[in-house]
Image 1: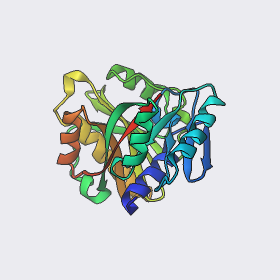
Image 2 (image 1 turned 90 degrees about the vertical axis):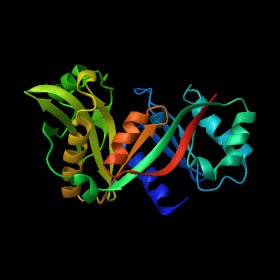
Image 3 (image 1 turned 120 degrees about the vertical axis):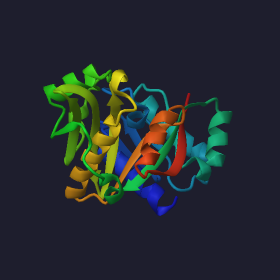
Amino acid sequence: MSSVESEIERAAVATWPASTVEHADGWVLRHCGLLNRKRSNSALPPEAVPDPDAAVELVEKFYAAREAAPIVQVSPLDRHAELDAFLAGRGYRVVGRTSAMFADCDRVLGAPEDFEVRLEPGPQPSWLVAAEAVGRQPEPSLDRIPQPVRFAIALSGGVPVGVGTFAVSSGWCGIYGMATSPDWRRRGVASAVLRAGARWASGAGAKRLFLQVEDDNPGARSCYEALGFIPSHGYHYRVR
């Protein structure tokens, strides 16, 4: 795994909540009964998996002990072709084809946008209301995201039009939960949220930003590319 790929995945583990995180034979095993998110409930493989049979047995035992379905985040996909084929042979199906992207904070900062963006230190009631207003169902356990973190609300005339979450770890800032009100899409809301988040992240010690975008969302990918984000690696989940 390249330095950037490895750093992004380590930062993602650190900035996204899971109630249980165990490390075994290089694997990161994650489980969170409060969240349905695959990232909180999947196993991340080490750089090399020389014995897929033993590795998958380890993963399956971890999730069986928690009465949960085993899920493997096959990341980066191009480095784990053997593991991916092995899981397919075991009946694991593919879900959530995703690309990880990153950018330097300085490149995303840019000029202020035509929206007010508020940054709150936690998932406060005002942010939860804003998330629902733009069509984003707030997830439980967001208060588990470790500090430093900010929950962003973009406003137009005092009305919420977009939200996002920014969490910093080891010089990286993870971007999560980006959402724009359907009536305000393609009008610069997401760019305003990202630039405000980048300014805060830079002040909090981050040099780079990362995010994940599913492959079936080309509109979001285009927005991120316009702000200077470039691909790091692709991955998907294997679920049995």
